[in-house]
Each structure stands twice: as C-alpha cells, then as structure tokens.
Length: 286
Length: 265
Image (cartoon, rainbow over all chains, first blue to last red; front, side, top):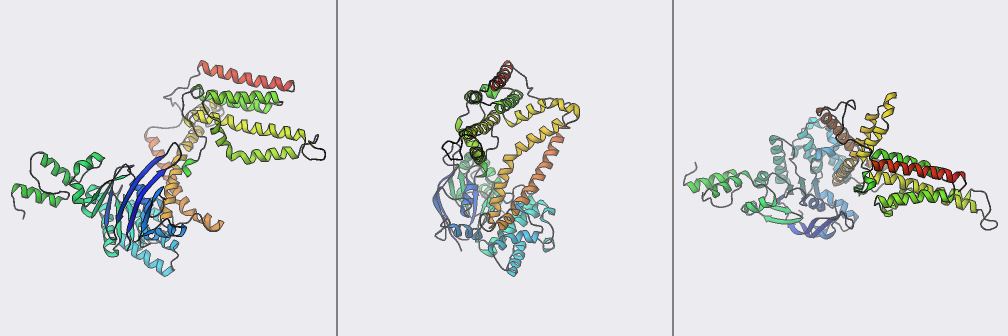
C-alpha cells in the first residue's frame, strides 16, 4: 500500500504573465497508507490544485510528489501510470460520462490499463457493487439515469481501476441528503474492503467530522491546520476566521459555552454534544 | 493552455477609440478597408499606414499586441509575397534572374495590404466589447428588417456564441482532466487513434452544450424574452459629436486615397 509524501510543493498558474497566481505555496505533508483524510478549505484555497498534483495531472512548479518514495513526475511513463494507483474523481463527475452503456463507461479506465476482457468484466462488476449500481443498469445509456445514479457510475469508473489512493472532490455536491449519505457509505465500504487511502475534499463539516481520521485545512495555498477532527474542531474560531463553518454540534457547544455552560473536551458529533451537556448538568444518560 | 487563445479579444480601456459608438467604428472599418483596396501608389499606402498608426496611438493599443495577432497569418502573408515575387514580369534585379523589381514592389505592397487589413480589424475588436459590437451590428442592419431578415435573431445568436466561447474552453479543460485521470491518452498513437481518443471529450462536451442551451432558453423565457419585437435597451447607443468627426475623417481618408490613385500616386 502506498504512502504519499509531498515535499515543498508549489504551483503557479500562468507563470511569467501578468495573470500569474500562486495557487499553492510550499506545502509539505505525508499521508500514510489507509488513512481517511478530509481536505477542507474555501473556494480558491488551492485544494483542487493540490489534489491534481497527487496523480500528476498537474506538474509542480517546484517541489516533489512521492508515491512510496518514488517521484511520480520522474518520466512520462510514471506520470501516466500513477493514474492507476491514485484514482481521482472530479467534482460533478457525471459530466464526464460518454459511452453508450453504463458498463462500457465503467470499463473505460480498466481498458486504458490494457487489461484482459475477463479481468475488465470482473472489475466492472466489483466497482458497480461497491457504489451500488445494479447490474440491470449495465446495458442502459448513462444519460438516462438519475443524477445520483450517474454520479455513482462515474465514481465506479474510477474505483474500477482499483486505486490504492482514492481522491474525491466534493463527491456529494448537489445531491439530496439520502443520495449523499449513500455515496459516503459506499466510499467507506470501499475503503474498509480494499484498505485504500481515501482523501475527500468537502465543504460538509458534519461528514468530515464523522468520517475522517485526519483533517487538513487549506487557506490561501497554505496548510492552515492539520490534525485529528478533535484537534481541528477544538479550534472552531480559527475555522470561522478562515471562512469555513464548523459542525452543527460544535456550533451549539460554542454557543452554550458562551452562555456559561462549562462543556468539556472537543465536541463535533451529536453524541459528544449529548454526553458533554449531560456531564455539565450532572444528568446520567440512559 | 487552452485559456490563452485570443479570439477577437477585447482590451478594456477608456480612450476616445473605446468611447466611439460601435456603429461608427464598424463604418470606419468598412471605409478603411475600401480605402486600403483603392490605394495604388506608395503615397496612398503611406496615407493608410499613417491612419492606422494614428488609430493605434489614439486607442493605446501597442504594436506588440497587433503583431501577436498577426502570427497565425504569417504563413499566408509569406506565401502571397513569394508568389508575387516570382510570378511578376518586368525588369530583373540581376540580369538572368527570375526576380523582378516590379515583383518585389508588388510583394511588399501585398504584404502591407494584408498586414494593414488585419491590423485595422484588430483595432475594432480590441477596442469594442463583443456586446457593443453585436449591438452596433444590429442597429446598422436594421433596415434589412424591412425585407424580413431576422436581424435581431442573428445578432443575439452571435453575441451568445461569443459569450460561451470561454465557458466551453473551460469545460473542455475540465473534461480532459477527468478523462486523463482515467488514463485516456490524447498525445500518443496514430492519427486515427488520436481522433478516436477525442470521443470521450466530444460526447460530454456536446451533452453539456445542449444542456446549457436548454437552461439558457428557459432562463431567457422566464425573464419574458420573446424576440426583438418591442425590446428596449438599457444602454441606448447615441451618436456624439466625436462620432461624426471620426466618420468625416474616415471619409476624408477614402477620398484622399481615391484622388491620389487618380494621379497614380
């Protein structure tokens, strides 16, 4: 399994023109195999630029990206092959569907890998299973599906490459609560069964708090905070200053503390909030 | 990068050239082109060149930008020049050579003519926003409505097409990245393979273009758009004194060139 190491990564758009813009500046971090990482940050904070470096879609202006200690931009071949290992699902991935059938679309990635027919079929079934796309949809056109189904087919298209690192940019943007819950659960299941590293870019603080083991907060091309959800959400004011929100429970806890209720510890889930309030009030929870 | 494409790019500014009514500028370009094709002798060409330089100075457009736009046309300019040099009869430069003095003169004039033609039209698009340009066109073509030419429809289609070029470029960029992330290869392989590799870009692009067109139509209808009939404008185009002066100068240029031609200059 793969370890991602980023060393002094820096990326400048339109370098040398009047439109020059530093998107990310001197980022160094390491993501161990199997970790579930949430990437937070407001629009334009550089998180999308950052994730496109992890599978060599963008090349760093300076600095290096290492996968298992090997520079992924070493030559043309590694730059191409890293895409099988690091799967990237873009925002609104349903707009990239193009094949005539759902099956063919999910098979696009594995086909590009040059796999045999049986292997492709096995992977397509497996990926469809992970994201909950039923096999009777295989022969339908992806354009006939509903929004949520399209999104899941698109995610399956990346999962079918069996990436060791799965990166998703806002996978639940624009979906209804039931649809987003389903997708988040599918991603969790993929991670459990494959042991892959998962990096999710999200605006939804509640999802990030509930699922991720580690949160990295981007601000103006820098890493502003990096730690467990406990650590990050114990500094809610900083998050708000950056222009992000905090989970509902954290916001309630902040308000209660302001009113004088002595809540202990870091609060970012409903259970923690309940426990903390019960403790402060001296009530036993049944 | 795809984003760097310049296509009749507009440079915002606040010069007299920017403030001129788009109708004036369209007519001026028309007069300019006629004058350019009427010019015969060096004096005539010199006069048009002078007019171009003055316009460039007035609109604060640097020659660098004009030359940048000329780049794609270099091949055509060079080809025209070469043909004129080699295929004109006359007195050879050196005895026995195919190159003649007449050919050389014609080649230089042709190059000058094409360059000035492009420079003049660039000055129009550099100083006029696409919206103003289509507005001006619509008003100029208004008389054609009498003979049932759908002038308003033509111009609104034009302005929409211009408006969506950057959007589509951005979209193409995004789809390309997404397909590359799934291992699509656009750079290697034979011509046929590369043409086939475009399919994963073109299909989503067309799907989203149709979706966008649909959404745009609904958005326009929900704002009660129903064609050009009875439509008023927020920005009324009005001819000012400077417009009449500019037009007079344009006519003067044309007249001068024609008179010079008459005297063979």
